[in-house]
Image (cartoon, rainbow, N blue to C red):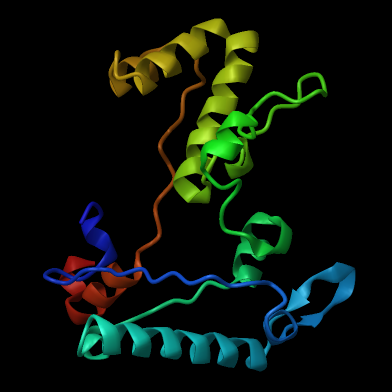
Length: 201
């Protein structure tokens, strides 16, 4: 709903989660390669597909009859996937569990006993996942700027607190200029749209 580029017009996206563990079927039928990296071969990709088909089948049977007929594309992430992209122990997709016990024990924190070492991933906050990792990264950068570049800190903090506009931040002399040269790659939905109608590409 928030990012119309993720699905073709008139269609949507769906995310299905299930508990998954790194040690499932000999680490998802991977093999250990050099330096401990998990090698993902045909057996790994086949297992991912098998698991996905079971999950889709269960959801279709219990709550969404005909679901499979609406699926144009799906992607499967396993603990191996999360480990590859994040290096998180056992491929976990989240950090510490939210809840009273972890809140009382102050599990979430940025500061460490090591001078100038600040946590900035999803382990710095309760919950985890990409949104929490982004929040933690932004907060970690603010902690550094507060000490190293007070003007930049005030600009970014003002923007994050919705007190100043993005234009004001970009015009701030405390930040290095950026040419906005990064171009976001096309999403699967945009690629599909471009194949159907090259004029829209």
